[in-house]
Image (tube, rainbow, N blue to C red):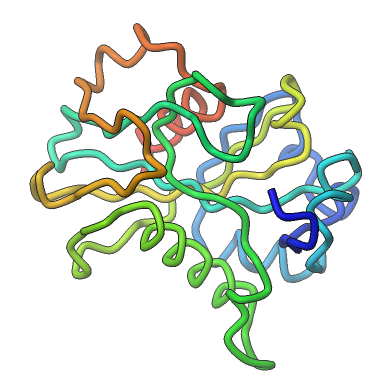
Length: 202
């Protein structure tokens, strides 16, 4: 983790109370999410400060990759910069949104969110079909784990035409496609469990 990195955050007390529940799985339209976050206000905060400030929510695009019949879900083993998640399995591709995701002074929250999500996909997948677009499903949140209490998940779903159309980059350790109905046998991070519940309604 770079000490100078800045990440997109929103003050928790400006967000709806139901979003900040012990666990939250809330389907919603992208327009509703964008409107609420824009009204709450957002800023780029040094990551070293945000990680230790429970009053902030770090906005994370979290993309679940599944086949069109929902029979298979892509998963990988956490080995990245967030050491608190190491050795857990994840069904979500994504990461922090940075100032580089603001293209110009007129960028809206929606522009920044989509730009950050697209950058994360480009960084973590060596190849993917550009014409298969992620669909926004809603938000997840949890105040159970040390990591979860300072992050807010903006969940997207990609329905893959074929698994081999997606080639993982080096950051997605042990990337593989698993039968969706067998994912409970993996030691999943809590966010993945919540996101998988959410995408059922997407």
